[in-house]
Length: 154
Image 1 (tube, rainbow, N blue to C red):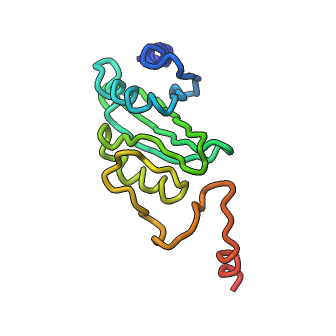
Image 2: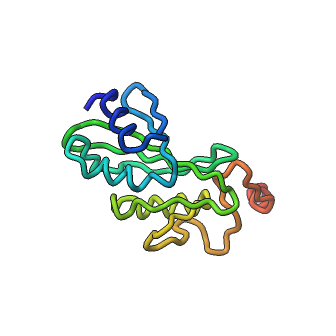
């Protein structure tokens, strides 16, 4: 599929999506409530077959928090990047894509640990990198840990 065809397919799947071209792929911002439905269709449809989630990461857009999903079709050799944002910094939540791509399970835990985004229906939503006692989310732009600075200076 060409980038133009991918943008048309995204528009068919979600009228509220905003698509832009990059050099190699389409970037599609999907409303959070449509993410799982769009992702499922992109994986299952014969002309898209996005079977490989090769990267999932959190982003602090300030004030919004979001997740970026890099997808590839290993058979059709095209790529797309999906972005879903949540405007709720106090209780950020998105639906999990673990049921679509198993590789999302550990990556979503990392995003939870470092950004504080909880993934609804995730099978094991707990910290993966930091201690359970850790306070805050170190990759957020508003994160502050004065004790960590003191420890670094020592």
